[in-house]
Length: 364
Image (cartoon, rainbow, N blue to C red):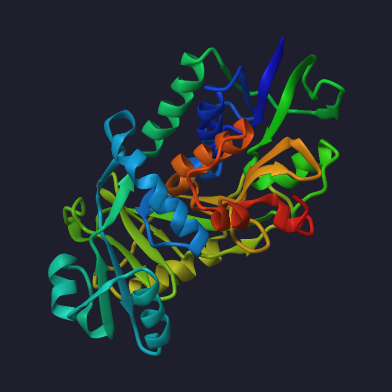
């Protein structure tokens, strides 16, 4: 069967783009793993903080807010964010306050909100109540249902082994099957450059960076449900309530030589837990689980969205860098607008900042 759009990648980038494109034609989405959102999307901290990221990312975050409030009845729930600074972290703290529009609070107020905090270790604290948990599975399934409702297909366990350009468009080989499509959408996350190379398209320089996470029991048997996410100044670590427990991350960005099913580095994880431990009184004595994911970045750490100017039938939806869920509604709408030849809702400077053309010498 010939499709209008063949999407490689079943994370939030692929399913959201697929949902928008399914309104323009027949979609086939291929995910190599046995389930959608298996890699980075399934290992996300799942926070919507509109002011988090570079300016282009913040613009996409803000443009996505209305959809997050309305899609499937709304996918956000209150969380809040608290940034904590220790000795010598004043500059990083001031940068965070300015960048994320935080409100400084007293140490006493910080401890009142999160009673496990060690007051003597905190030199400054700031909060932002406009930070929200994202129901990531609900968002993934919403977009996947939309693809199917519009006659598209979502196929898991389907790893592309070959991609070739044809007079019609593209042929993608999966096992013994060959799928044809007019337009190929590269939403392969950490594997995005590999997919481009398979398709004969020059890579952009997408770099996968590992981030490790541990889950611990609720400290001191506290009810953590209403606590904000905690973050060390300069994002040196974070801790976030999750299903009655806490997840803790060293927030590392360690390059990996090849994309793979990531696992945590025990030493790096221990260092992150130690940084968290400095700010709290209960001792971390055991983990209930741990994992890692690969957050993939373009060289300028800004998302890559739209047709490749060297072959407009090859669409990039890549470089989410940990901002995939926050930006997905606006990012996917932009991709569909560009493919359909419609004037994007986003301003022209932002569209240019996100375009793959910036890596092709400005070729449009």
